[in-house]
Image (cartoon, rainbow, N blue to C red):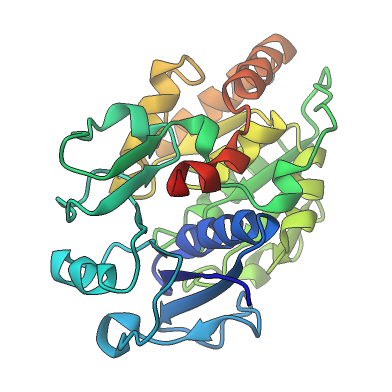
Length: 325
């Protein structure tokens, strides 16, 4: 009988899509290593088209009466507190906490995992935890991203732009970006990802724009294919930047949540970006136009692509061994 690794995560209409994607990527690593996996999701939107039948929908923070012992338990949550982690730790000798910004002081028995640029920004005290795994080389990527080998060709001109604002987009930035791109760069083809938690976006207002295409509920393989078609991506500062980084796709990053600050600071420190966009400033659209004008130049996009491919050399296959050994 296979040993079981349990994942506890969350997806809500307002946030959490990145949590689920990370856990899917993490579970694939354990399955490739010969473990059985189980993913339990706390959600307020059980009808969202992103869930597979094998996932278990349950508010594990309230109903988490864990009766079994697990080879490892991986928790990716912004809501779990120290008492929750202590309770969970009773059911495994390997409790892994996925952390983005040193959110709380976790129990000493935890293994801290921050497989992103923020891992180098936030100084975790190694004396407080069982183990610390940090750095962009350990970013969690779904299998089609990990396995992709084709090099990105940087074209002389920008003709296709991908717009992806994550799972929710509460500020309706997608509409603003479409309008600005269509107005200032009318010849561009825009591929727009509509997240499952988009509440304010009105697709019908763009029906007459023949250069705009919309996509929903794409699997990882389809996302790789769509990203590889893009000359430039306009993205939120979450998990998507690691997927783009692995593929070498130049991007403009928009800070849509506070927990993205570590990613953005990390991008700046390794000289991938020298500016990010704050959607709350009055001249947001003008700043977007200026950044796009800069990245129209092939040289700037080529340099960015080369830096991304150099930094995001994926070593995620070693994470499983690092946890257990």
